[in-house]
Amino acid sequence: MGLQISPSILSADFAHLADECAAVSGHADWLHVDVMDNHFVPNLTLGLPIVESLLAVVDTPIDCHLMIEDPDRWAPAYAEAGAGSVTFHVEAAHAPVRLARELRRLGCRAGMGLKPATPVDPFADLLGELDMLLLMTVEPGFGGQKFLDLVVPKIRRARELIDGRDVDVWLQVDGGVDLDTITICAEAGANVFVAGSSVYGTGDPAQAVDALRAAAVEAQPA
Ligand code: DX5
Ligand code: ZN
Image (cartoon, rainbow, N blue to C red; front, side, top):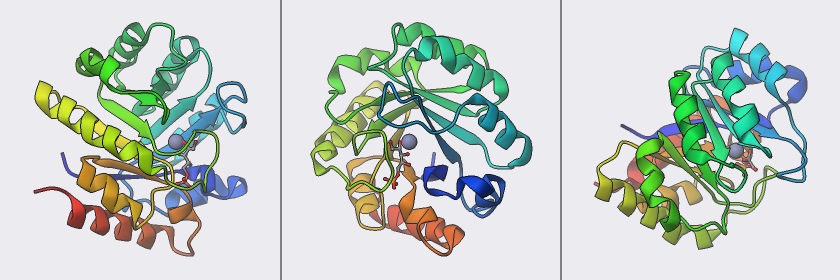
């Protein structure tokens, strides 16, 4: 699969979410929706009712990033609502294998997220259960933070593990991704890029998505 860009609406104007989503339609591959519960992370954003409302009006598939406690209980409802991809955090999941299987059973792509300090090697045997591995490149909770270079070796390692097992798992990065850092991530082997402030913090979100894609394509290993 090629490179994909998933703009995060966390940096969009919440009073005009449908318009903000439409602004990247035809340019973005996904819309990244950050669900935060003020427990797993120290911030509160939005939940299922807003995701359901967006699903009814947007034409871009929704990539739900659940930064919540007890995703085993709450994540399946996002799949049932029609999200194309649902990512839970391994630090919060009680039974990640069961949850990933449940998401897939509901017809959704199953993603698993790792915070910056969570190593990837212990989860190598889970890769076959997943459609996407998300490596956070900031501490989850807020948009607009600086990219953490310390995650780059983990991106390389995750790419090695995925390629070594011959599984079709997308490798997503999220946090501080801009025109400079997307190059670092693409070179290291990431292929799905979340970008919040570097898309919605600009005057032209669609053009920002196109520019990020071009930078990633240029940097992607042959
Ligand atoms: C942070 C969220 C990100 C956030 C990224 O916890 O998971 O998706 O929107 O925002 P930027 O791209 O501004 O770092
Ligand atoms: Zn996110």
